[in-house]
Length: 134
Image (tube, rainbow, N blue to C red; front, side, top):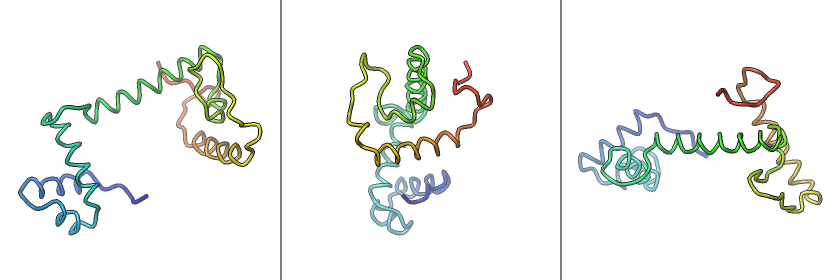
């Protein structure tokens, strides 16, 4: 995956298109894909209110709300962070649906390594618990 562009770069690209530069040429000259630039244009139109949809800030709030819901459900069910990361399944359902995890050791191993890497990057004030500040 390519490195993300700076907000200044994004703004410059959007301004060029807004000034009438063709999208394809602008993207080519800036060394990016046309589809990426069109996605930025769509996001900018939504964020500015020109098009309907969830703004970037609203999307961030929604992601955070969903995360908090998952944590609340996990707390209610007594599930720890490590179990959430390792399980690779939803804790929201009434029953855990077996998906062959006991037989898929290579997948479980890869998932565990990814979970461990993600957990090691968490910035937790109290490393004994993985609960967000309320």
